[in-house]
Image 1 (cartoon, rainbow, N blue to C red):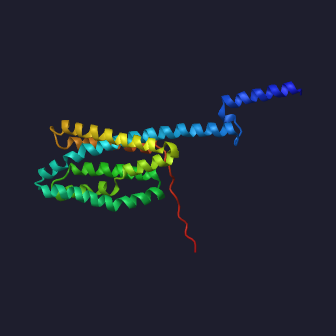
Image 2: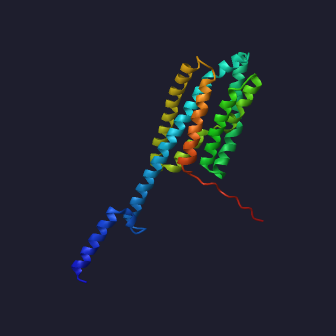
Image 3: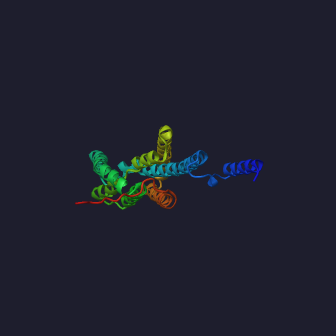
Length: 231
């Protein structure tokens, strides 16, 4: 084979490598760059889906939180009862936060995010059946212990993003948080005048949508780990 034919074949192969990144030899510079770009695009799509999950979650929360005092008043609660209801939630968060953090490392982020969203939906649905302050307090237990959506979302963003882009994506998570708190109370105020439970029903529906998105479309960023004991 002549030198000219070799050069032509080499040039043709190089063009194929550029047009089709899959044909690049593993370990070559172009292969690494294309693989890195592909991973970045995939991670961006995961983060965008996560932002949607956060937005829906915050809308669901902010549909219900402004109405808690009205639930307490409806059940003949005092101002002290309203304050204690908020403090009770804070205490539950204090207990549940480290537990959920450990579970996210052992079970995976996705599993714990599903637990968080499911617990919130369960609590807000149970709240609509409150016939006394005690039941209202009980309805706050699942969401208080398990609701760590923002912490898990920020952890997933950290898992998916490079260090130089991390602050940008965390800022977007906070933007989704802010937008959710704008939309949720506005909707709650408009529809609660018809029935106090309507916002809670919508909240439960939103959490069902969130669970579907996470279970079927959001990949895990950290697989569950196994612990081995040795003598």
